[in-house]
Every structure is written in structure tokens, then in C-alpha cells.
Image (cartoon, rainbow, N blue to C red; front, side, top):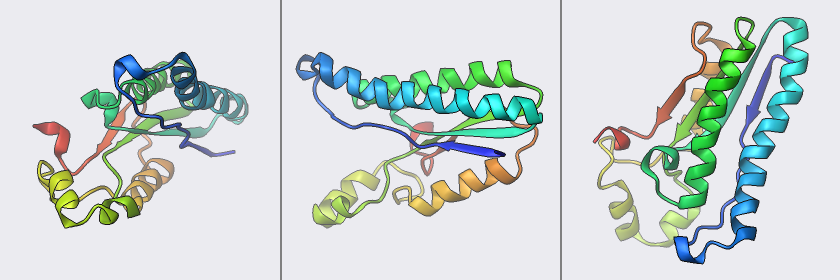
Amino acid sequence: LDVLVNNIFAWNDAALDDITEEMWDEVLKMGLKGTFYCSRAAARVMKTQEYGKIIHVTSTSALTGVHTQYAASCAAIHSLTRSLARELAPHVRVNSIAAGLLDEPWVDEGGPELREVLTRDIPLKRLCRGEDVAEAVSYLAAGADFMTGQVLILDGGETMR
């Protein structure tokens, strides 16, 4: 086992007053706990073979605070990334990718006005594509041998403002 990509999350967006305990638990159980348990299982193998890369795919919500429970789960995974990177070094690299809003079919279903609103504050004037995430995963999996404990922000420049 050379590479593990954790791309686990649950989505149930609500305002703070409307977040139920079940909603909170679902997001943290799938996102944070799922990432933790998969990482731990892979780390056992990777430590034994003295090589491996663990890549967590999260969201820029961890940086912007948008979508309360999802943002909290993603931010916790960023912290987990740093902790695991420290503990598993020098043989196992652990990094995260924080992707911006993905260009999915629902965007076009909302009409051209929705796309305009969603891309207005992105310097590269487009949403993140699945191919963008795949390229970042490939970079971390096949190279980046001197990178560990980092969060690669993949958002077209949106969070730099």
C-alpha cells in the first residue's frame, strides 16, 4: 500500500440553530472519524514497509468557515494531517488538499446567473474541476517527497483575498 486518498465527507448544511445532534454527528462521523480510521489502517502498513503517502481531500470551508459542521470537520482533518505527518515521519508523508467549490451539474441547473455569482470572487474566474483535484492528488502521490503536514489550497485564488 503506497498511497491512501481519503475523500470522505457527509453534507447536511443548515444554520447554526437548525443543526441537530444527529446532523452534527453524521458529518463528523463520516468525515473526521472515517478519515482517521482509514489513515490509521493504512499507516500500520506504511510504517512496516517504511514508505507511504496519505492524502486527505477536504474543502476550503475549513478556511472560510462556510457551512458550520462541514467546515469544522474539514478543519479537524487539517489538524489531523499535521499530527499524523509529525508522528509518521520520516517514512510516511501526510498532506491535505482543500478544494474550492466544485463545478458540478447543479451549478448549470441554476442558470448562468448562478455561475456568475459563484465565480465572481475567484481570480481565475472558474470553479474547481474534478480534473484539478485529480492533478493535485497525482502530484502529492507521485512526487512532493519533501512535503508533509501541508494543506494544498486548490481554489483558483479565492481564499487569498
